[in-house]
Image (cartoon, rainbow, N blue to C red; front, side, top):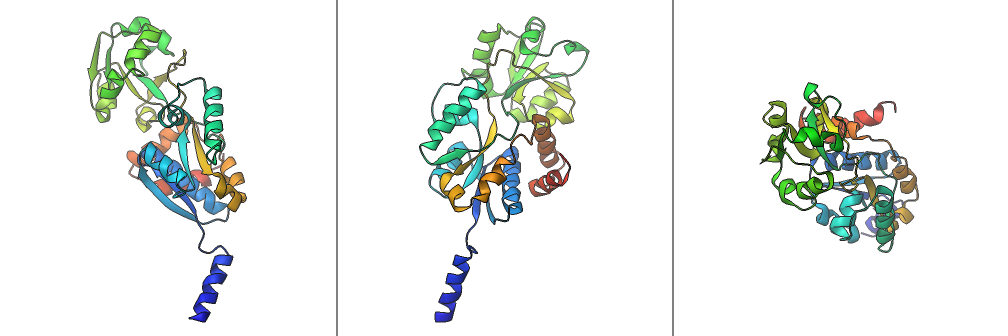
Length: 280
C-alpha cells in the first residue's frame, strides 16, 4: 500500500494525471475546431482530454466558468449578445468588449482563428446574379426573387425584419422552410436566395456565392479560443500554442472542412490531421 501511495505521488508530481480539457458545442463546425484545439494541445507536448459535443452556447460557457473544461472556441457576436446581453457593434469594438468582460471572470480570448461565421445571404453564381456582389446590389433584383429562410431568420428582429429595414430589401415572396432544405431549394431553383451561415459547407461544394453585408447589419461572429487564465498559468506553453492558431482558417477553409465531415462523412479527427499536415 505504501509503495502504491509513493507511485501515485510520483505520477502526480510529473503531471501524469493532468490534462487540458477541451470542449466544443454540438454542431459540425464546433466538433472540427474542438478537435483542432485538442491536436494543437497535444502537439505542444500536453495531454488533451476531449469533451466535444457538450451542448449549446450556454452549456459550454457554464462548463468553462465552472472549470469543467479549460478551453473551447466561441464566437465574438454570440458572446456579446447571447452571454453578455449587450448590443452588437463593429468587429474591433465587439472583440474589445468581450475581452474586457471575460477577463473579469478569469477568462482569456486568444487570437482569432481567421473566419467569421455570421449569417449570410447566399445566391446561385449564374447569369441571374451577374454583377451582384453585395446585399445593396441585390435590392433592385430582389423584387423579383423568391427567398427561402429558416423559421427563426424569417421572424426574429435581428433576422429578415431588421435586414429588410436597413437595406430597403423586399422580395417577391418569402418561403419559410427547414434549414436542411434551403440549399437544395436554391440549387433546384425553387428559390433565388437563402439565408445560411458564412461557413456552411454546401456553399463551396455547390458553387454558390455569399453576398457581402456591405452595411454591416449582421454582428461579427469571429471564432476564437477562450481559455481559463488558471490553465494558462498551469501550462505556460498553452498560450503560445493557442496564439499560433491565429489567422489560420478562412471562411472557405471552414466550408471545405465542414463539407468533408458532413458531405463526405469523414471524422473531424481525420480532417484536422490532414489540415495540420498540409503546408500553409
